[in-house]
Image (tube, rainbow, N blue to C red; front, side, top):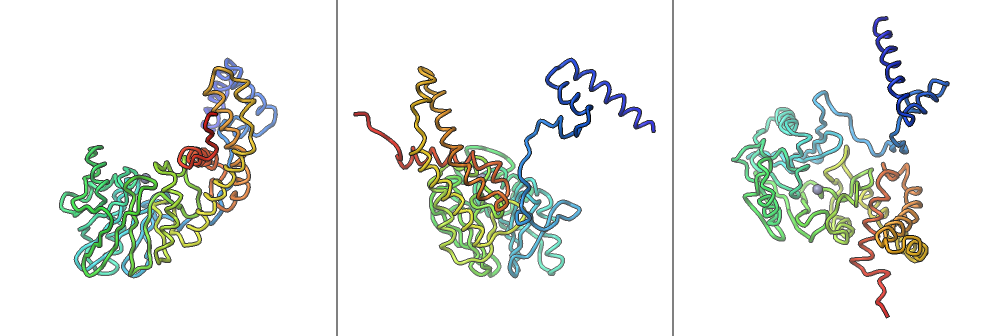
Length: 354
Ligand SMILES: [Zn+2]
């Protein structure tokens, strides 16, 4: 009873405060008139529901899920990030160490090692690429772990000098086969994509490929095609991934493993955006934007390219809503990125002054 009174008081004081600001007072008054109070006052946008195919297995009480991929290869997720590990007779090889999973990495390893009667000691840590969101728990594994990564990963980590991410001890340029406890893993660099150093981690004896921050099973990429530094390289990466033999895909995100169909679907989504960008570039007339904004060239460029982006993105959002989660959230952002790559990398639509 007392709680209700308190909440009534704070409600009244909120309304009184709101009344001072007309912008806030309007929805509150509208809500009192019989609308839906919370929804009416909520300034945050609504998005389409995510399809069930976007979700992975339920997390345990500690906030992680660990599962077997094949035989002694496992994956662990917190629902947003993913790592993998291989148990061997000589130690555990860990692939990435996202800080959001953090201490749950060792808990997941302990759980599996105890169940299988094998060592839980992490002896090797393989880096997919230098980004902190995938490596920020690396230092938890101490100094005696052998860290393996691309030569460019080492250069970037030395530049960024983050104690949470010790630079790799073992580096490679194009290819490296890691052998631990009778197991083998093939690491390869096939050019820049999401970052200059992002590598393909192939488990030939486990039918698995790990390629982080490229195709995200069940989801569209986040901002700007997963914040990719090389858009053309990013767009080519799924084809390279599919050129390997594998059944299981560890994407680094989000809550489930991927299949070859997931990578093909991602490829189709990106191809659809690129095709629509080309037709939209050809169909939107830039003249009215430049006439309206006159000397403000950037205003003309922004409004023109935003119009092309929106025109290109709309059918893709319609096609993939209910198919890939968050198509309505991030497709416009990635469309602008592809639009700029088609203009600047490929030279599409460039005209040489007469
Ligand atoms: Zn990344």
